[in-house]
Length: 355
Image 1 (tube, rainbow, N blue to C red):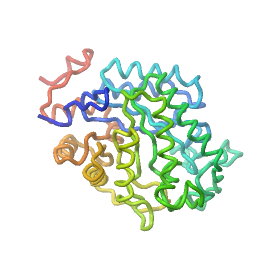
Image 2 (cartoon, rainbow, N blue to C red):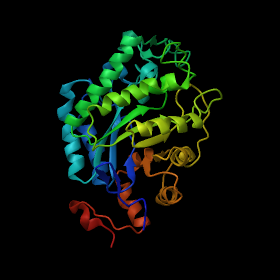
Image 3 (cartoon, rainbow, N blue to C red):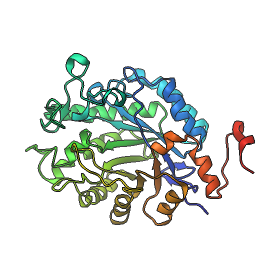
Image 4 (cartoon, rainbow, N blue to C red):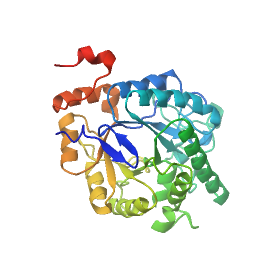
């Protein structure tokens, strides 16, 4: 029997299969509001048979957006449109999740098709925030180093966003602590040069993440899962390493985190990452085996047999598909045929099901 098409229960939520639509920015919102694009983009993947669909990096504050077109959840007015999307996803048998995010010093950027460069204040950009006043690259202006009050506001904003996510109908939250965004900036010694209780030692650099988790768990139901996406390595000497990720994951398991979504890189500009098929799956395997926690593998996983083998080999518990899911929203229906797995098709599409 295919593991990829076997269910997985985490707390009181069951995913009908192990196929996850990875959170992927669409750069299509105005003032953070979801719209028809997001409904069709996410909804079509639910029709396509994915077990879990995680909405893109959804900003907890206006200044936490990567771009002005990012999805947001920083005000109550965002809830109704998000609720429309989660209702549709759940009607089609998938679980709706949301990735809560703050971009930190990588915020205030133009969308990819407009250059993906930092916007000046005159262009509609804004002052970015970070653990330390260190720019991401030489073309960016330095961020403002957060003071203690600023950090407390960030934690409070994550908590408020979690409450809105619950009201919007999401059944899973993923905290974005990867790809060089704010929480990742606190974790990595390359971007965090603070000398207070949020910088220096490993214990201090993980403090913000732990406080965010605690705040979210105060309002997020015990019956609903909480995931954390991390950059399991910076791919740079003297940066965050897989050993740090294992140690962090052991701690997160005791704090109410159910799964580590294992990505990598992003905190330092210009790093060469060894991009080969499944290149991040060894990171998921190392964390799964050494921290004894559920993991998700992501990154250049593109076919059914590859995904199935990762699960068979015990390297991960869920498989996230990003660009491959963009290329084919009905990927689970195709993968099931390749793996000889019997799954339900939408009634409207039943007549097209291979016999």
